[in-house]
Image 1 (cartoon, rainbow, N blue to C red):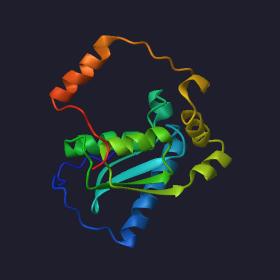
Image 2: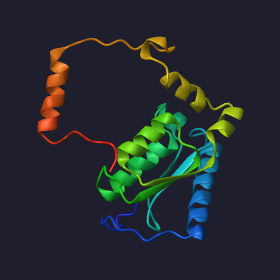
Image 3: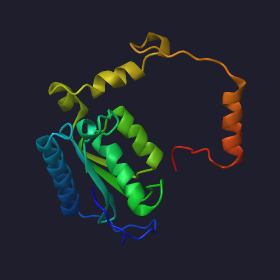
Image 4: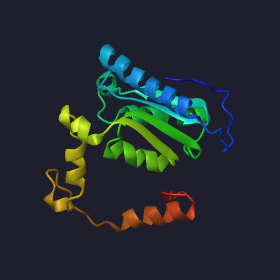
Length: 176
């Protein structure tokens, strides 16, 4: 993972050139191969960039951490947030060796990343046994029709916590 404490915190960014974008994508692909070869996780890598400076990076670490959420994009987001000292990655772009799965795409929205660049598509991933597309199809079903069932249990305390968070300004709207 990248540790760069000299990154400016400003939201302005230098626009990367086409050559920069190709270089960042190659770095993500290189990370995916390093991760696979080291047995840390699946063949995925991600680089988060603000302008032309790397803010965070990671390969997939699912096997290394025994954590099914340790996808390259999630780990790169964590790295960038730590390096930049914020959970708001507005002004940053992510370069991923594969089209982000539903979980990673949700995290990208939560982090407010500006643009996603990817190499391999969701369809190509499915051809090689990665089931992101199948998960997405499951999520589109009504909760009661999914393989993993979801059931609502009503408790007035649940909404009270939401109200308290909103009053504290903690609610986080997706979008800009």
